[in-house]
Amino acid sequence: MSLFTWNEKYSVHVEAMDNQHKKLFELITRLHEAMSAGKGNAELEEILRGLKEYTTTHFADEEKYMESFKYTGLAEQKNQHQVFIDKIGGYEKDLGEKRFGLSIEVLNFLKDWLINHIQTTDAKYTEIFHTNGLK
Ligand SMILES: [Fe+2]
View: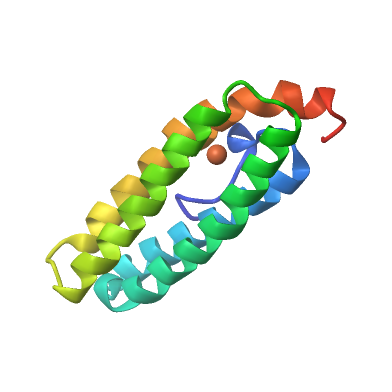
């Protein structure tokens, strides 16, 4: 089992959001496996593209629900989502300059995101999503 296999401790207890989060785990696993095979930098371009696509759909969905549920944590979420988008954009630029060690930096950033965003910030929206009938 990969180090980055989704498991219950990452659940926000909203099925649609868990399913979207699982896609992020798949991308992290792909990056990790590529790195283990010594192909991290070679695969990075495609993985960054995947992350960008992921954010445009997933963040928009999360924010749409939060807006309609009048969730008080929306501003914090939007800020953190923007940080993620900016980071990925920055990594894409760095990729053009073939910066050494970039895949490790990206992997560490993503690992941190799982803990500090999904497990911490996202976990706080479970209650209001449930109150609004989304489980
Ligand atoms: Fe989020």
